[in-house]
Length: 464
Image (cartoon, rainbow, N blue to C red):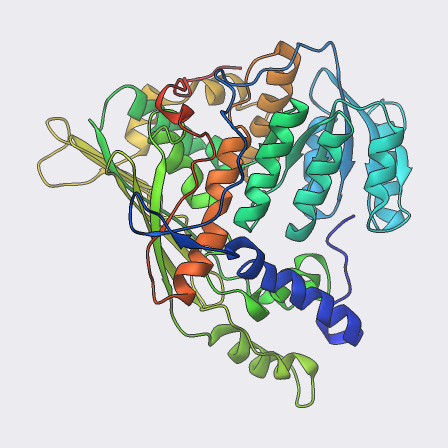
């Protein structure tokens, strides 16, 4: 189950229809039955009656070893496997992918690392079900195309396994609730692997926030601003599926990289919560223009039309009155940025480039280089793990996020992010699509914690 799926240009008409259904689900299934909230007067997505959420953050019993089945070993999945083979306390038991050669490659890497050869599962898109049923696993980890995240996680939990997934965990509000319901029912972890929460600078900013350097945090800005035109039109990897979502979906399709670190700094679900959202998108030009410039006359890519606006802007207000800007911009030429701005009553940090200002410490009305503060406020995780993370994906943050998940499972402690965080961050996808489709009307976030956000303890400054 990798990202190797039939591209639009060669797909059958049935394949096209099925993929269009997947894209339409982001707006349709997620927003079915939206009503006006009698409490706020704003639109609100439907919520199932699950009763009260658990009173304490979930922690499973400690383990001597974490036995893992991995689904989807394309680019990002294979990077996670390489990390897991280097982390103590991990036993890689099974590899599942729709491309047999990818399964074999990961099996060989395990053996080269001195580990037992994992069993292979490569009988098609749903072979992860057989893996979950047959294998004695503690954790099912998946790095598959977006539409498979929820089926894999739910299947894992139904079969008594914890679940971890790449981002976003889901892209409809209905599926957000499905993950929450399954995790509570089966008493299993369901973790969204948001690697940017473990980035070098994002971790330093969280440490500074916890030390009160910026005062009371009032505003944040994040985004995913990344020219993906070449990747989306590639004949391999994400090009085989990611572009398809732009056919019928229009909103913020990838919010979690920019939003995750802001949510941690604001203790979302742990003292505050996302309350409501408004969103708007601009015109769709970038992908069509790219196809005209890079494909010859008569190419099917030139005939494609996209609903996704090239730039989406979403605004979130929290229950405590904070404001958050979340941007999405992946179809136009631009340098990479996640923005990463955290602002409080005493100062702010602003990324790309990394700079900050602290009243009473910085020169008046002048930015300082963030690097000048790094030694003093480097996160303990990075102090302990910088050497071990060398060579891992995305500057080492991928290794640190994988390490922390395994450590929490081994120690029997709550994970740094839980299913409520996965749901709240991912809900931006479906909510933004609804708001865009309704002239930027505001829509309430579901409270996936059902009130527990008021008493849940904030995430501390965790160590290695």
